Amino acid sequence: MVESENMLKTLTLKELYSPVRDDIDAVSARVGDYWTKALQLVHGPSMPSVQAGGKMLRPALCLLSAGVSGAGNTRRFVNLATGMELLHLAALAHDDVIDRANMRHGMHTLNARWDDHAAILAGDYLVARSIEIMASYDSTCIISRAVTSIREMAEAELKCFANGDGPMTEAEVLEVARKKTASLFASACSTPACLIDGAPGQLLHDYGMALGIAFQLVDDLLDLRQDATVLGKPSCSDIVEGKQTLPILFMKDSLNMAGKARLEGLRGSELTANDHEWVLDMLRATKAAERTEAVARDYAALAHAATAQIHPSPYRDSMAGIVDFVLARNW
Image 1 (tube, rainbow, N blue to C red):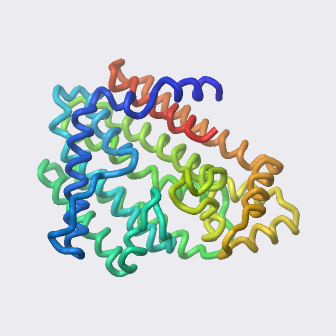
Image 2 (image 1 turned 120 degrees about the vertical axis):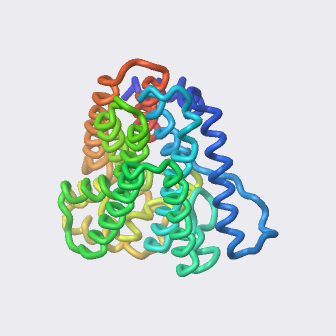
């Protein structure tokens, strides 16, 4: 992974977003406005404005995809990109309720700040605003793809709920990643093609799907490897919450009975420093991290293969660079 690590040193997200920098700033401002309006519904109009946080990856991909599709001016797609980010924020609000999470990006979640009921309503509000914004394009194609990603995210959560503590296969875990995370990536990348004749819509969809799965696998490893100060939330939360991610699945498959019992015993517990060190040791000893990295690289290769078939441009270069950035942020 030396090549990707070197790429990360020279290409930051700010640099990768440079072809659509002004539009990203416009999206960030609009997302902040909608987020503020959601908070003001509870706290009143005196609630000060807030800035949009996060990597803004989905709106950036939406704008870059418009660029590679031949959009003469990507400014036209700022509302579409804003809608995609609002869907992402809505999904996070709902996820935090499901996971009983109290922190995200170093800040209290909505369910911790208010309660589950209000947090779910806030997520619903953001979904509604997102669809409302996208409807301004008068395109059933855009609405259909956005709603499909919402449906697939819900299906993934319901699948996990129905499965309970039952074991999941590698294919099933990857299918959850595809629906829960990658479907919105694919929607963000492919919806601009709804408005541009001759756009490589299927290639952009395939790119977004592959990138999204790789992104989720890296996130799953970060959860186990990084400490809370870096993550902005408790580390190893997937283990504590009993989630079945690919590195946890690989680790569990290779542990002996005592190891499996200890891993299961961490569920619902407050992990100690020794627990965290044990998890890191087991990730290495079982080669679970190595195996997960290999799968993530395979999906990254699929994303690169898709971009290689798109006409060269600075937009395409940024999309290829984002694939390397996603991989390099972990190992």
